Length: 251
Image (tube, rainbow, N blue to C red; front, side, top):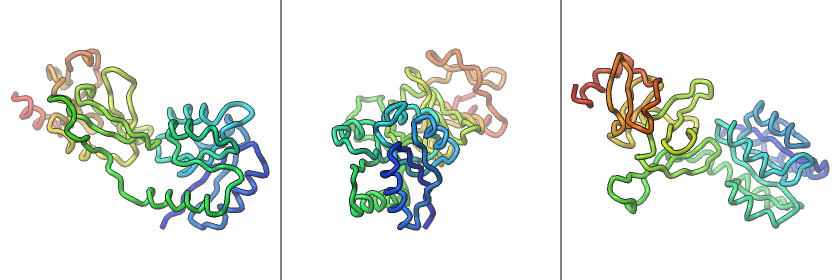
């Protein structure tokens, strides 16, 4: 059983003290820091990289929804968010923003216990990184479901995927798409897991996996792709993977 790091972002001192008191009763959770506004909270989240975030909906400088949206661009680890507020009218919005749960002030011991129990169950349960959707898509429209670092689930058509790139700074894989910005995958995804999803996905380098359906040409140890990825110049082919690529590309 591991220890889960917790961060609290709230401007209500009484609520903070109550939550701290209750969390100390469970040895599985360690509160690593408390912030009183959104700006401080963002810095604290980046520094601590918590497993569980208790986030107030209304703060002096921004709403919890706004902060959570900002965090989506920087969170590269598995973090679950619990909205913590006295206003139950935010519940639907919280769910839509992919919060893990919702804790209404004032809460009971049982309310918090249920959230923590469900958190631990999910955190310790192996989750598939990729899965296929039911066979409802049109022919040729194979669909891949991916999970992001904030535990959002995204459904992508293979036709949208040009290649995967490993981000060494954040230590995770990213999906490079034709019609939207790159999507970061949950930390822990391996190249083997990506390749196993579809025969069209082939690794060409330690940091690159391409969709063979877009491969146009191999020139000077670089893969050139068909539009809309024809401006990509980073796809180097390493010696380790060159032979397999040549076989797959019938060279």
